[in-house]
Image (tube, rainbow, N blue to C red):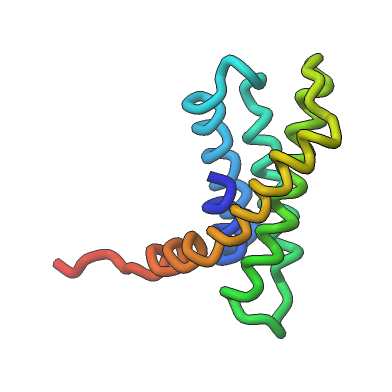
Length: 133
């Protein structure tokens, strides 16, 4: 879901990206992790990521597919780091070097690698026009 939010934020205006990120975060809150995190945490983090990506990804000198990988890497690091800090606030003791090295960093690298596929798919789907009647 994070990679779709990042892709969508790179492709559309910041206002539409924020609305889409909030909707994706609320859906993710209700479907994926309602018993772990409070409702709205992922919506807040996805909006933060959409805002960050919308302004980070405005480099006109790099093409879309190349731009999406480092932006996804930074977005995944910010998102996962913010989740670790939120877990720490809720009393979980997950903010440890072993968790960061063995869990967070491999997931961030996988997210960056998958971003090429997800960004291409979201770009393709965003260009499909309504069928003719």
